[in-house]
Length: 363
Image 1 (cartoon, one colour):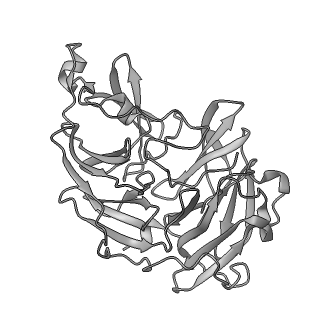
Image 2 (cartoon, rainbow, N blue to C red):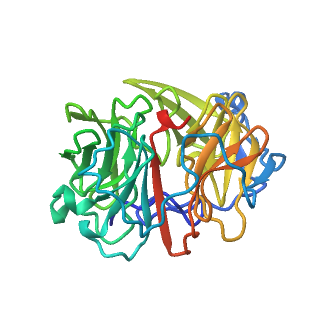
Image 3 (cartoon, helix red, strand yellow):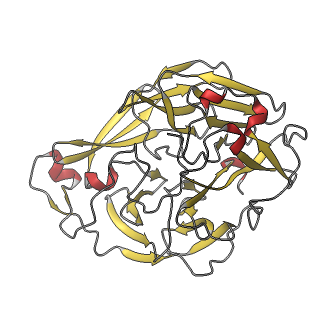
């Protein structure tokens, strides 16, 4: 099955091969405080009810960024990226697609916005990839731009393909495993982390140096999102009835018991300076990291579908996908939502679009 677009029908649901979604929230969700958990004392209810509840504005104002007001129409005829190199790209966008789309490279087109403000089109079949390496019937997605916008990475069944946007020469990199489930650049652009499926259910993460193409097995399975701003990978695992946060930095690990219900945290978080944001049962939950108490919940409305948190625009502002509007920001301090880039018309319930942004070039 091919790589699924990031947009999800609900925040507690992913593609068929992913772990089961968390159970619906309950006022009885519990997690021991950091102190009581460390000393084995009884757990107490996790205080989610008092958290502020926010909603996405019906017509959110524009956020301050270099991103365009809107994605180009899905049927746009654009200059060929391989004939007109952009050098660097600010954004990649895959027009809407569905789970039952025909699985072949000739069916995949990705639009790129260069730093010159011009959109270009990449027809994936032009890269000359073997037909056998297409992920198959499913949504393919927009791949991942490096933070500086110089390199684009995309999944294949054999591993990934890297495209230098200056030379527009593709490089296929084979990795152990049967299928690429997820990939993400580290914040400093030095590595690409690739989650691969091995057999029916085993998942392993490989850290790849895009310059040398050398790779090694990572000490964690990459969650849907897990990179902190400083480049660390943060994972949350269960230890008995407690949740353990592990900060992976190079080869070192720092483990701490935290006051979070594991059902909320097991998929990972967008980790900022002061807050971590989790996707949970049709809402985003912002948690203050000193106390691990929830401070705000961005709740989806009827007909809205949001994707996993994608990163931090600044210390207090997160950005993510919302299928009916586009790329949206949420300030976890004041609750305000703004639009980065609009998608029009809104995606139908059975279709999905996705985008990747060179985060160093956002502002």
